[in-house]
Length: 223
Length: 211
Image 1 (spheres, helix red, strand yellow):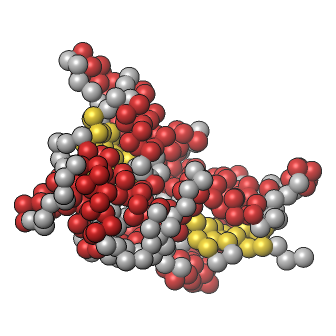
Image 2: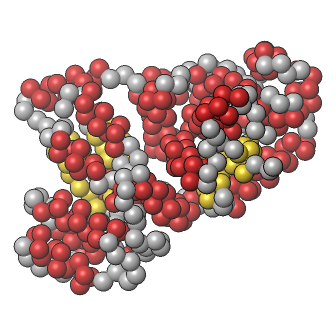
Image 3: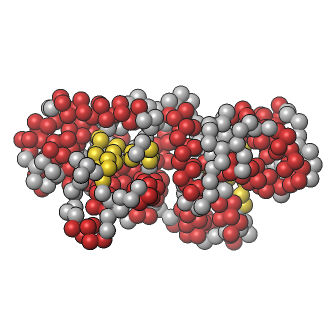
């Protein structure tokens, strides 16, 4: 009996539930009646080239008037996963191909140490609640992966930060680091583990390869 | 003339492998290539962690992708364990009698959309016989240590490529991971001048160019 539940019943029930759209549509309609917008959360890491591939999500969210919340992360992946380092290596080549479809090129062609870009995650997190958060995150990802290579220098990004945020980047602080760790914990708690991951009205997508599907979800929910 | 080689790493327990298979087996019809099928053991039989969050994501995303490309999906019967081994070894046998695409497509469709219990003799035998495979040969294949060894070698080769999930395609030293990366593989095949002319495509029998 237990074998049947595990092999047959549970997966079929889950798949059937995943395919059921009306509860989400009903909930979305109710939220719209209350004047609320669609909620999209994007968890992304600067050391992950897939994050720059996911940038069209920003346009999609804006087109559907969704409320997009950014959650920069430094730690990512599942504990003890042997595929983690393989994924890091492969993501360079794969991102190159995904960008090529849009006529873009990855200029940085080597695996990046998460600690080398942690300052960017901290700077983005420091802008939480400010309109410049999204603009700086997109500009920094673009500069990092599409327009630069070699050593990653804070000074190169500080001028970009000043230009967009209108003030100097924050000094490193325990508070911001803790908030970044909380972002990843929040992501794990909600059911995802990697970058770039988008939670669109309660449903997860890998944001670098599912932007059209994200747009489809927002559309069928009525946003 | 020797054809360019494209390897196709496949697991019967991978929903994305199931979604990729029909397009994969069409590749030799449209390109001057030989498609080499490499059946492998699934992640759960390779000691790779598959936490609940990842399992749920894979199921949800596979369902979305199946709907997008118009493939039936959802009436699943998990073949983990002996069911997987039976399919992998019969696939090796099917390749020797020229029925590999037919078997892989029918068995994976059975597992992922028809609730076929491939660990039981009855349903698997019916499926094999419908495809023209002799059941006695399939039983012999299941017990064939050489076929199991081939699967182990395929699995080791995937790991040597630095890959962990399936489906994976290789061509000209490059790996393409994912059912949604077949278009990138095709781009590379076209760039290598391997696209067939429309007349040649029509003249190529389904299933040819595959082993």
